[in-house]
Figure 1 (cartoon, rainbow, N blue to C red):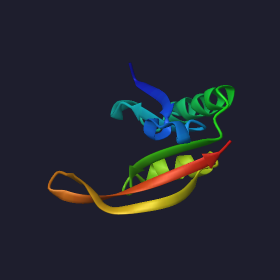
Figure 2: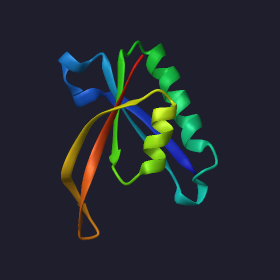
Figure 3: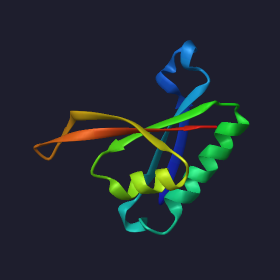
Figure 4: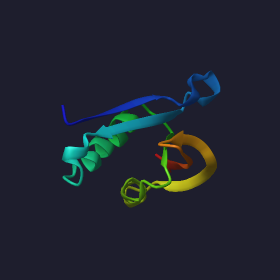
Length: 101
């Protein structure tokens, strides 16, 4: 497997049932080959088919290529949480992106 994508109800609560959170993973050896774009396009189509109103996702602020891809697909940056993650002995910021369908 070179990658996968998933949708789930945002925050898993009834009040948010019209919004979905997406997750996408592409193995590092397969980056920059259009797989992430194809997975995201499929997730947007599936989310529309499931009648979601909004898609929400998050990524590390250092993942500039991911952020650029999502912005090219119509997502907007809506929040940045500072130093909420920690990896490799470093604090990481997280960016949230949203697209209304």
